[in-house]
Image 1: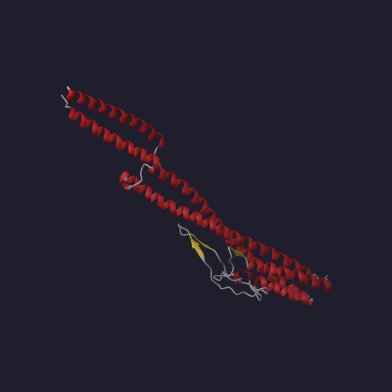
Image 2: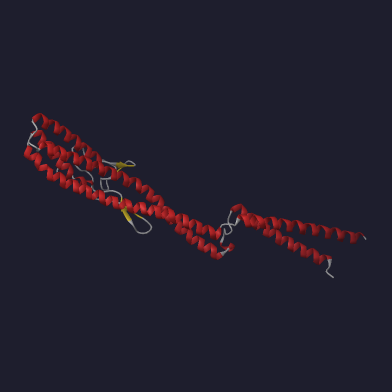
Length: 291
């Protein structure tokens, strides 16, 4: 026959076990996590840690890419403005070289060309978040003067994503737009001078210069477009990867709330039953003592 002491010890151990399990379940419900420390499930914890590291890298790529997208879109807009300015200059030069304009009209065309020159210089002085993007590594000061002289350098900087892809963030503006003696800016400077002097032959001579300059800017814009497409692809892939990795990690460590809630109810019933039995046993023991 089992003694009262043995029954009492058995009930106490059972109650302690149920109480411990109930506390563990309630902790998981409170945190939403089945695995919080390595001892909870060493294998799942290790696998989740590896997935979280990948997720962090993908998240960083997404954040970095989103920032770069704004910069590259700004640069692309500057290229578009430059292309429009050069095309406008080509139209002006074509008119000035046609042999059908008088001195007064030449002067008007010169004024138009001067305005076009300022539009092109403004494109070369484009900023993103207060940094000049066409000054090479000189990002604090405008790379082009009002006359088109270049004061930037030939450097550039870039960023590298977790997969090793590097994207250029700044450029040597002189190599793209020229300056007051070369490239697109130089060609329009020459055009303004030729129109002001009424020299049709000199005006005509700027046309091939402008065409070459247009191609130079278009090539640079195409290269930037390729970089922007890569960044867009990286951001899209990173966002998808973050979602996938977060789900995979959650499957390893997140708690099954519905199942735990059911277990909690069951454990609470067991706890109540054990407490009741233990109370009854204590009463019976007291009766025996009094008898």
